[in-house]
Length: 580
Image 1 (cartoon, helix red, strand yellow):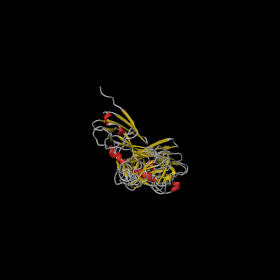
Image 2: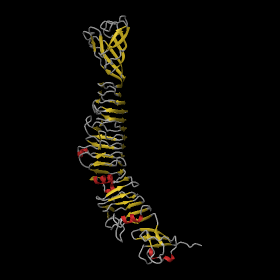
Image 3: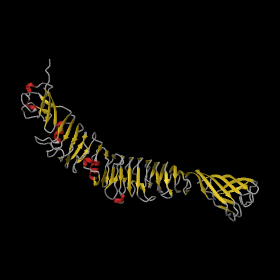
Image 4: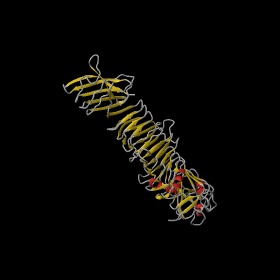
């Protein structure tokens, strides 16, 4: 029958005697015996005896009995916890007997055993400094735990490839460089580098260190605080996220604030320019050649200059989702989001349900392929270099003045506008509901959709022009792409004069002269109650319509055709035609 194993408990590892692990006589030890060691400072070790090991002693991993050891060895079991000695002069260097530096423990554990290394604090309320002068790497099999009150500092670089256990308190000093490698944490807190978040202290250095800590990118996490910072630049793949509107990253000094890298996400926090106190400066800059950023429930506010500015060819693939951009700049002159420069190729930037809080939302500049769905803006700013803007389901307020749509090849539809619109763009598709407002198309090749716009036609004749006097002359036009439907209504008054020669009525926009267009007219003689019909005909190259009676040969509309016109007589002309 096999002998039962024995469990031992000691307060020390080496030194012999009855209180240390190596003091047990090897003759009484059996394979599988277990030992539990509790050292001072709550350092815990668990050992199992291997009767045939024969390994050289290596404290704390292999312990050889002092007496009658033979091949019997106490083997430290994994997972286990090892504690760093804060008094080691350089945690990145091997130390003499009696110290347990970070490097000593890492070297002893190796690259395969699972273990936790703890940097313990000397006591509640104390600050325990661990100095790292020589570079050191924590491998992926080791978890590094920093107790509260511990600060690791020095001129060296600590690369952490394993797990990192922490609290929301400072654990790194100002001098040390910390890098989180593959397999390590993907979220860091500026508090680890001493950020305060009291809406007064400059936390710039903490954000710079947090950004530099990522080897392969990750998130800088904001608590429900107001952090202040001077300008800083984020590396590629580095993102920031918060806890909503109470997580605020606020500018500390005048000037531009944050420069973003590629493949970056900003989510659930506020960037505040504090322009009332700090004046000029832009919020977030996206440089040329930096693609693929995303804003999710982000708010960038209180900048007198653009909140978000793309350099030419910057931000290709950018997506904004339900985010707010507010500038205090002059409405109609300064926009919250701007493209500064001319893109050299299509750089799609997409905004879904953006909010503006009443400012001018977009200055498209020289953008190529800019897309917006939803949102409200007072004014929009286009340039002759704007290309392929796609805008849908937006509301345009009146405070920004007339919106001038310039550039080319835009797709703009389902827009509700409270302001007049002038189009100088070419080859664009524009569908705008602009009741009681004027859409003036000074471009070419555009397909514009707008219903029941009122215009006042000019009434002329060959020799002497008529004058409406106290009569009424009104017209409406409905444009469906490049086709315009016109209805002209004339009610003669007592002081109306009818001129000399055939009549012409101007069209709201020039016709496409490649085709000929006809419509109808209806004349009503109030004196007799009779109606007369005829053909309306667009005169090519004159942008005018005239009427021809049904007689053969046709008699043109004039002072006595098809009736002798008098007070209360009515003329109605209907025609549709293609425009340029």
